[in-house]
Each structure stands twice: as C-alpha cells, then as structure tokens.
Image 1 (cartoon, rainbow, N blue to C red):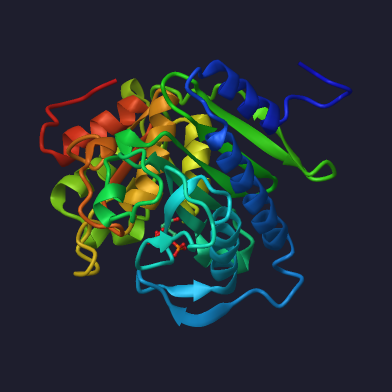
Image 2: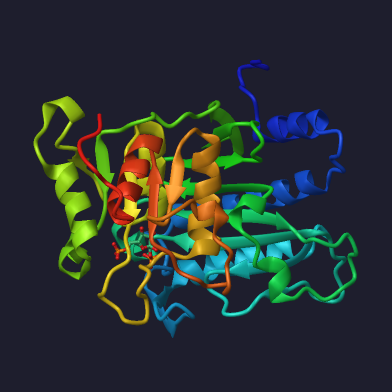
Length: 348
Ligand code: AFP
C-alpha cells in the first residue's frame, strides 16, 4: 500500500511478518532493525570510498590468508559494535575473525547467533564494482540465556537458519532477505533521501532454468575432468537445450548471485587444485554458502556442493570451505549430475 507517495518500508514489512508469527516476541525484529542500521552505515562508507582516504589495504592478513582491505575492517567493526549491545544475540561469527565473537559481559544476551561476511568481494572495492554483506541467523538450541556458547552450538547445518540474506552495495543499495517457511524472498532498495529501505522486489522467484553461467574460468586447468565437462557443456552450441549459455562473472559473490537470482542461471565456485590449503574451493560454508542457499531455496532455486544440498552439510569448522553451485533449480541439478558422475545425456 502507498502511503503519502512512499511504498512499503522494510520496518513495516518486518512488523507485518512479526504479527503473522504467533511465536514472535519482537526479539528478531530488534535484531533485523539493528542489522539494517549497520548496513546503512557501511553503505554510506562504501559510497564515499573513492572520496576519502579509506581505500587500500590495512596491510593485515586475515584468518583466510587474504589481505584485509580498510573497508572490510570498517564494516566488520560496525557490525560487531552495533550488534553486540542489542540483547538478542548470544554470539557472532565473522569471516574476518578466527574465533566466535562473544557478547561483552556488560551487555545482555539473547538466543540468536549471527554469522556474517562483512564485506564480500573486497578485491572489487578499489575498482567501484558492487560488493556486499552476507548474513545468516541461527537460534541456539537451549533457551537459557546466561550460558557460555560453544562452537558446537554454532556449527548447525544451514537448514536450521531462521533467516538469511544480504545487502548489495551497487548502483543502489539493496537488501534481500528471507525468514524461510514460505514467507518468500523480498528485496528492498535504500532510498537515499529518506534513508529508508523500500520494498522494490516482492516475492522474488528465480527462473527454473536460466541462460547465464558464472564461474572464474581462469581456474579451468585446476579443475577435475567432471568440472571441466560441465563448463564445456554450458559453452557448447545446442539450440534445443538453449546453449550456449552466456558467461557473466564479476568476482563478488553477492553481485553474481543477485544477478542470477533475478535473471536465472547458475553461479559456481567448484573445488580446485589451485591452493592445497583450499581443496574444496574458496567459498565459506557458514558465512557465504549457507545464507545464499537459504535465500535461493525460498525463491524456488537450489544450492549444492556438487553432491547434495548445501543446507544439509553438517559443519565441522566455523571457517569451513565448500564448493558451491547455486541458482536456477534445473541448472544446479544438472551441475550436480555432472559433478557426482550421474550425468547420462542431454536435458532440456
Ligand atoms: P574477496 O572478498 O576476497 O574479494 O573474495 C570474494 C569471494 O569470496 C566471492 O565474493 C567471489 O565470488 C569470489 O571470492 C571470487 O573469487 P575469485 O577471485 O577466485 O574468482
């Protein structure tokens, strides 16, 4: 409903979802609202990144052996500082922190666990390509609030996420999120002069089959035969099955995922032999693959590690890596058939 020329705000949307859930206590609404404030702060800094002395590296190497960009460090700090005081979290986990992030003793604790990648695609910061923040939210198993959280409380399969989504800092800033269970995936665009996210993409559905494949093909020589055969398949001419596909790859997971979510297609980061320390590919299960897998599932798509659903992987480490095939259901099922060696012939 339009109110005085403004569409549905994200706050209205979250409150409506809260009213429709008889078990809701308001805790989750508080959590999401504060996350949105944090993302607005990050968005503001990203937008002025070229104007101030914030570009470039801190010179520090993070837990993933990557050079930490200043904006990564900033986004991480903003998220931690804004989220730790709200009283709804029992701990956090960030791509930038080796260990779980505790809630300081002077703040109240809650039942939710927030996992995030504060600034995904950071190698694209200096060149003005879209980057993003990815988040997944779990609930801890016990209802007791004043207990110490162990890593085993956090290491739950993605299917247990109660919400997940991302912010994309692109030509505009967009938040896409879902609370699962058929509530849909919705996109909200930040309206700069209002400072509000307004509903812009209602009930996003990913096309069942797409025309786009997104992968870093520079890794071709490091892939196994099955992976190469899959990529060759997408590039081969065949009118009946809609090939060749179009190649699109930005190198920011959020941006590549968002495009394929709206247009259809498949994003892949296969396992490769490039780095013996990362035999299962580059992407992280808990802060990248799981949240996007929840979003794509709710939008009618699928996410696989090449052998089965991402959401069913039982994690053993906070920073576990996984191969990722994600997007249109039929395209991902086809990729799974190739990778698991079950592909038998042409599909439409
Ligand atoms: P950075 O945040 O270090 O740029 O990594 C981004 C990312 O994890 C993901 O956003 C991209 O899809 C992927 O890496 C790109 O990796 P390649 O550069 O190996 O293609």
